[in-house]
Image (cartoon, rainbow, N blue to C red; front, side, top):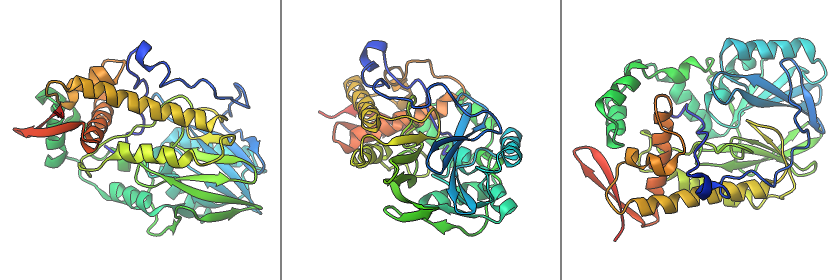
Length: 365
């Protein structure tokens, strides 16, 4: 499902993955300091960092308050759950300087931890939502899909990856409407942003830099004057964003798009202060991008060797992940593995055969 955002511990073995998954070479200017609930920390000229709590292994999302004259531009929002709403209310009460009246809400992408409260904030302050078209449409599509039963196409997709009856039944029992439960109702209209557009926020100019692979049109915001990049999920310091093949576009090449986006971001200055959606602000953009690129390339090589015999996606988990894949991790792991197998297809290193609705991959002769 598209609402599943990240896959921690996606490395291979300790020896094989040490260099590729390392976050060494990064610097954290604020050290161990992080915002508490109701606190906003200044991190750059006109930019404050707030941390909105959320359940699960990610624990939080970082949101950014950017001074915009007599207003504030909010970048990303958190989930539509009570702890996140309470955290924003605490900010409204405790941070009058950083939390001037929100004038607009910019969402880097459509995942629910990023747009979950955009509609609520927009209605509360009469603030318009700004997003790329691809992300807006995906968010609107998934919030409008009110089916509770899992569609047959989704079940067929799980079976194609090699899921057994028990796994299909367990996932089906959870229903299909998780996304809309985590996202407040969205307005009918929005303000589209596009790659390369310059947005004036206060006295600074922020350029939209679009990447893809983790989602269709992820918007990063780059302030060249002050050397700052609001990176969303496009560059994270200690985990790798989930790059998945999904039922909505089963012939896509999300990993190819992700790798191309890394090359694009490598054209930005390497000394930027990176403001990620999860983890702490850091410097060392090029070091981290290279590590993310090399991590995926390493897994592609190991998977290609594993396909000396035909394999399903589920047969490849041992080559993809350090941990045993069970329960809630199954969907993430399946999407990530299929994205890598698809990239091998596109590169001509693997072929896919369909037998009784199941996808089998083998190395190209």
